[in-house]
Amino acid sequence: MNNYTKEELACIWVDSFLCLEYKYKKEIIELVGSDSINKVFQENKDYLEKLIGAENFNTLISSSNKEYLTFVIKGLESRKIKAITFVSNGYPEDLLNVECPPLVLYCIGETKLLNGENFSIVGSRKTLPISLKLAEDFAKELSSVGFTLVTGIAEGVDSTVLHTAIENGGKVISVIAGGIDNIYPKSNAHLLDKVLEKGLIIAEYPPEIVPKPYHFPVRNRIIAGLSKGVLVVSAGKRSGTLYTAEYADQLSKPVFAIPYSVGVSSGVGCNDLIKKGAILCDSPEDILNYFGKEKSEEGLNLSLEEKNIVLILSDGELHVEKLCALLNKKVFEITPFLSMLEIKGLIVKSGNVYGLARNNLEV
Image (tube, rainbow, N blue to C red; front, side, top):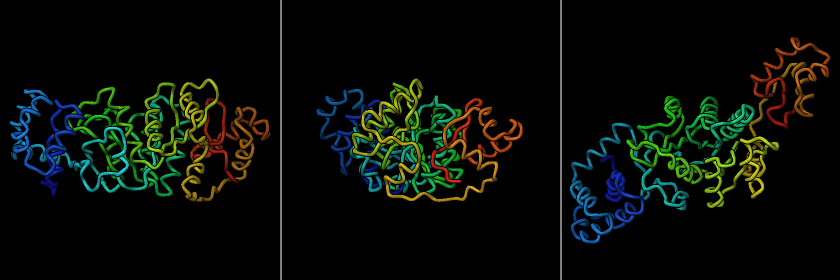
């Protein structure tokens, strides 16, 4: 069956029973090992009935046969899912150190990325446009130096990271909260087709599981466990994104956070992380330097007018009228250059206020 070992098949078999809690599944897997499932259940009937209840015991014993296991495996194969269990050779070592390691990772795509050079970029669904632009910049730079970017599938930062990395030829891993048959939000289900072109989709639940609210923060331990570090682009006071940072910290992995001005609700969580010891991060170079990587340089190829705008904005954000006054130009005269700088990803706009997308541009 897809070259699974007896131990792996036992994991897949036990995990298919949605009636069992994690702790019971893990104990049963350890009890079975590479032995015959039916034999182990018969020899440990009294103990297992007491552990999981007579009804659950009868359900499992009646399904401890090749026909049922074949049904489960064929269901995975029909969806092109490869099951990587916590006893598999390809299971990420760092995930074994997280709280309640996933018993099975249901994967579609390049499973070799599980043990690659991965970095996580996460943030809130409700994120300011300027923060999404920052997520785009970080995703582009980090993927360009070889990091596989790990995130979720939500709107906002997750989607921005996935789109940016894929469009720039990078690799991605999207960790979803429920089963692969039930992508949330449904509006982003199409994005997974793009992910599969350049990466991997992971779920820790069988395909038919519908995501529950508690699945999302729990899912974040996988994102942290797969990554060498975590960047939090945005986070409200109670953002689920903060769980990812907490898991990373527990695993002694670096946590980076973008700082925010006072009063920005979507940045409160980031500022709190920095107060607690996260690395203040305002450019991709902060992360690249931490890991000893060099930025891939590209010529900016700016016109004289574009260079003048960048030089003026290097001192800080400006209203378009103030910018015009400093350039001695009319609004309609500089609008084309502002638009081109936005397209190039060098400046960002919030209302009629313009600022540099990063603070280290050299023109």
